Figure 1 (cartoon, helix red, strand yellow):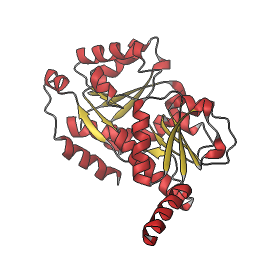
Figure 2: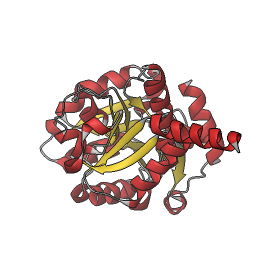
Figure 3: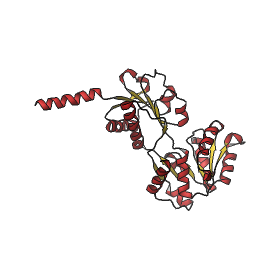
Length: 283
């Protein structure tokens, strides 16, 4: 009986001292509740979904901001570590208060690797960009092998969006899509995909959502991937005060649109083999 009571006290005590993590959202959606549960299971921490407008910072040991809304409006004192997930690299880099972050988009090198594994090493790759992102993407391209054959098409240097797109498609075998809603907006995406399809040029998307829209292939990090990487960051950060620098998610999968592949007469390589090959290049 005595041992039983001691065991109960130890469990109760550990729950009292468990790190408390706030998963801050603009609005509650079921997927975030699932994410919180996965993080709690993997870390042993208490992970609670909290609306940004109801957040009380004194209650928590760490804050995880989900998406652009909470990240853009966050203005509380930086007395607890703050981590961002499901926001793009540009938004994250403009938030100096963050302790760590997982970018929502894949790295350019990953998309290029996927394109090469599907279509070969010799093909030209084209990327649509805007002037304000030219410097960053030019730097990323410069870090890739010289044989990558990537050309950036700055939309701001053309008379129209369509002119830039047509120029790219005339000289590229693949269009590499970026996580940029100013380019790949709901208004533009259909036009981009239809025009690219007419030129027999496939789109490699930056997320799984592009597959449903008509992209040929994409790398993506799902809820389990995000929870896994976030758990690693929280365990190391809260456990050892060692916060990982903001970076891309190292856990990902590859998705294909087989209907598009058939239309373009393309044979797609095995998904597991492709994922393993890409991960090898990122080690």
